[in-house]
Length: 521
Image (cartoon, rainbow, N blue to C red; front, side):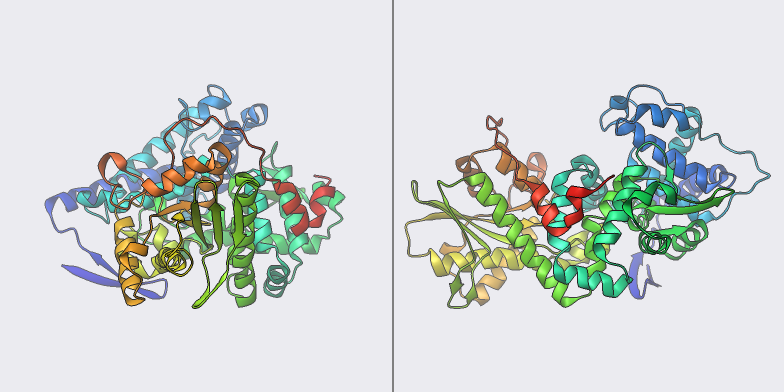
């Protein structure tokens, strides 16, 4: 039996779990939810903000600062992924969100001590039990392959690392264009460069303390009005965060996959006897918000969105030219009889091989990230990736079909749409073949096409020779990604023996945001 619920302005169909197993799971969920709420209600939200900051600070190597706020066992290495005391950041984020949905603390109740590791562990154990029960609430166990992208996507940025020049350079080059700056200013009423200077100042200042005050930012030459504007864009008061959490919740989505408060609004404005303080529970998510998150500030403007796509293609071209060197031809798109070709054309005339690369900047929308079966529920969202496959085949048919060149293709994505997408990668290619049939592209011209996100592709460019990458693209097949070949993204299994100079992202950043080279923070 099914029922329909109207959520977030759209109709969402959910199936009731009418079996005894379903009722048992619901009972367990209710039990662990009560346990969690009993622990969270007496705790001030400020304590959770500080706890979140301390755990991340320890993981990032700010050991002394972290221990001032939380009694923590082990070394910083023990708190990193794979360590004995690793705490999943997405779980901390979900716990903080859950507290915000409950509202202010109940002052008369006994309070959990979140300066003690025992207190933190108790809270995490209860949340983990609830998360484990919820993890199967909206998909059948037999559909675990379809749900794997959702299980992995929250972890992806944490595994890559958020605070690095590659991320800053990529995002600011792509989004801080003249058109992007104009769109940002029109939307928020503040210059994008000023916004980034203040936000980065808060990021830098919160490395040793969970909060900073306006005085710390005075060397930047900013006004209190500008600081307040930044807080309005990427932060909120505690009361505002309570309201946001209540308005964006859903009983039909597991807590691990609800919208993230520290990614969307990473600054918490608090007040005390000394005035306003700006708290940052996750510096990593603050960095995400002021880099990749700029997309959401400009996406509604057609000119800025178009220009960001061009800038991403330019960045991809720079990276491929840098890492493949002068011994190969690396050129941008060419005119064809049907319009422009795929974005990047690589030709190695020594062995008559090459790569056709199509760049796709579209970000993964929230509905895809939270779906237990992304392709089935959100097939239209993947259409851009399907078009990328077809564009590569069409380019080959137009430019290389009659040539002796042995070509392969890469759909290069800003976001890794297909990582762990083994359950639907073959469906993408099925759709691509249908479109290719309509365009009368011969089957013989449908060359191998691999999928990969920008960060993963750049790592391959850094570590491997062209011939290794070309071979891996040719061997990539949508039919492989099942069982032991679980994946969905281009990779090379052999050990790397290559060391290459890294693309100079500092120049890209300075060109987009000139104050970068002169920043006092």
